[in-house]
Length: 289
Ligand SMILES: [Fe+2]
Ligand SMILES: [Fe+2]
Image (cartoon, rainbow, N blue to C red; front, top):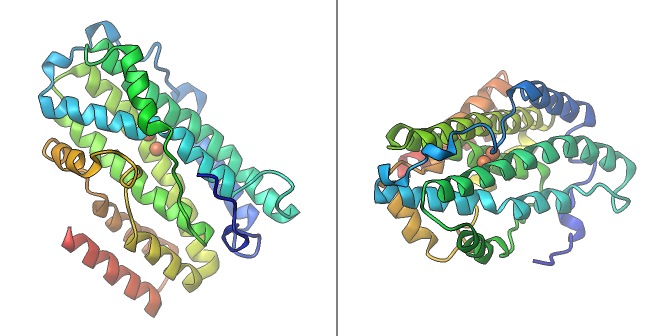
């Protein structure tokens, strides 16, 4: 999508988290991600033992599905580049904020790209797919545009908060039922990474709540009201597929909402009326699911 930033959609310094606040959040994320704890596709797993024959048909389907989701990383990364540009299209204060955020997004992108490679490598090693066939199949969805047309910066973090938590929980459940220990090992790594990504998003959303208070309540509510998992709108057969893999493990993004409520309560001493209303809304969304 060649969507230019409409002037109203580019977060400007006035509504961005103060750079000091963001820096603390980014430092926290990087401190929780030391090189010693990093892993790589090449050496972390015993690929020779990977065996998709030990998986049920539903589990294989789930692996294919999440490979598509993770493989769309270039599209997700591009969203941050477009809405938080690090060039002279923004004023100096906004640049400072965006430059700090970039320390997070590049690291996060490397990790998500590693997830995509690990899942693709599993499919090949376990006998589920030929490398070149898989590459071509992933390209069909991978080249489709992705966008999060939000108006307030907190919305990008609130969206990612829900999505990272939902993904973390899905991987956890899939790992528990996985018949192949190599897949389980891959999912253990992915689960830990997603948990760290969630923590960063939670930290940032909490800081928005503390610094901007009720002004971010409606933007957060909009994210929840319009929430769609990535690729839900572009992927061929997404909903049929999503329902099928739900039999294997529960891919329920509304389960993340209770974590959002906890973040709200940690961020503020006493809930204001708008916050109370947001929490009631979150509870309703959960009970509907
Ligand atoms: Fe991931
Ligand atoms: Fe993630």
